Length: 116
Length: 113
Image (cartoon, rainbow over all chains, first blue to last red; front, side):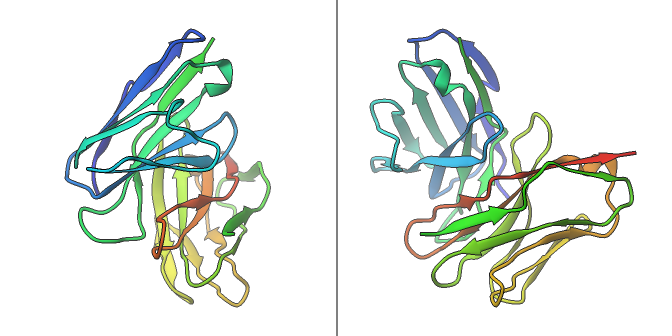
């Protein structure tokens, strides 16, 4: 399985600011995904990020609030814009396979965000 | 649409007890099924998976069997340890079309010594 790192691991931010979260993988992967885990809740998919194309957002998530970049096959960023306390969550990236389709996703350690 | 339902937690057991966490799913076609585990303060780790009916996934003493007739994928372990304390998520994915993991609500497990 791929080794996935995220930066920062945690942050405390002020309302109205933005935070960019980085996800780095140790091998080239086709698909990368961003999830949100609100306190005490399950995971919800924010968007799917494929290299060379715009991210595909799930219902309830918009590009202006969660812009995503995918400049190459090993890296992606998620920005949480104009933050409010409701954005306090763990944000996790996950990756699909190095090539082709597969059913298994592997997750990074997550970024724990607190918005004051 | 696709959905996953897990037994409600939290679940508290004594060390060496038998564990079952129920998981049922709703999906068209033939999804792949997963159990992920989240230890305190960490991200998600894949625990086990099964890709077709009657497959049994196993890892670290945990087992789950893909039961299409009952649309279930219950997680079991014969003798739990304190180190098994974590949140367990059942999930499904359909490889055809959007590769979207659908998670259950999670079950918090606490094992007391």
